[in-house]
Amino acid sequence: MADCLPRDSESAVALACPRCRARPCDGCAAPRAERPLAARAARVFGRQGGQVCWPYGLRRPAPPRARTEEALGRHEAAVADRDAAREQITSWAESLGLRQSRSGCCPRWLQRGRSGRCTPWACTQYGSDGLDHDWLDHLIAWTRAGKPAAITTAPYEVGAKDEERLSWWTAADPRLSVARGTGWHGLGTTQIVMWRADLVNATASHPTA
Image (cartoon, rainbow, N blue to C red):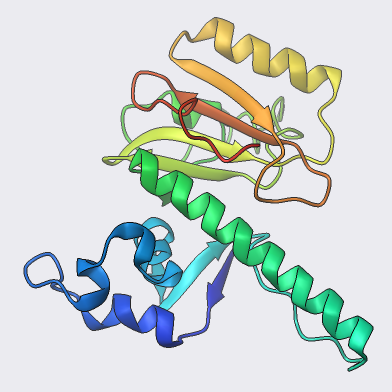
């Protein structure tokens, strides 16, 4: 599920230069760190109707109904937290040359040479056995140069079964590596990153702290 950012002054940079590779606009010509976040994120997450399609969990909270100083202060802090998370995950993806994929679903997708959805009986998240369903909560799939390269997830709990599955995958396929920590999703979740070590080096820069 994606949360699409309403068109604003930031997203206008990405929309105004469809041929920016040939003739950079001011926003695209600027160093990456100085470009508006929405323009950078559009390259990572894509756009729909001129809006950045942020992954689930990165939406900004709605303004509070109670306009008290305390409520407004909490809202301001929550917005700042989500903005920081947006910057964190966008910077991480940029540093590794990753793009979000709508097809990724489980580690079997990650083992493929090209992106495409698993068949229902093969998928380890949505298939009949669902062996990896629990730790794949809040999944984002990533490609690099069109190839499956990484998945990031943020489960609320990582149980013994989940640990067994993570260990099984890295033992079964030497190309797969796993890291974890606290990441962009927040809310007490554990950030898990599983990646193709033959395609990216996620240990050098990953969305965990």
